[in-house]
Picture 1 (cartoon, one colour):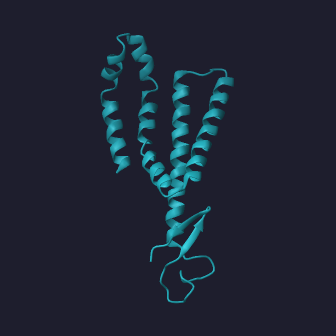
Picture 2 (cartoon, rainbow, N blue to C red):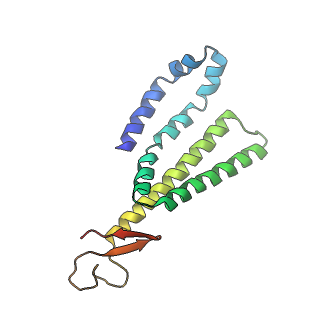
Length: 155
């Protein structure tokens, strides 16, 4: 649902991009310059549904995975800013927005990866039991440790 909300919001922002920018300045040169990276800004907005995953992971006590996703995003961001700054073209408004999009994509990908791996951890039987409970009855139950976080498997 979060993806749909932010896709709709991104579409609305895209539709009103020129009047929106003109609301902040009457300078057409500024508006024209801001329109160049606007597709990237709309792409950033598409990724903001990651906040739902962030909250869900924090709520279940998986703060380390959230911290790692943000640290990876920050590392990619810092590396890209350094790389663009050292390049012949330097840092431009367009490149800064590209770096922001890279950051959001890395954070979103990291949180999605963690959510998917937790989903699989809940469905997998505990290691070495083959049946899910170790009692041979084929039902699922017990706890699975996934990355230091105890995950109660559905019964």
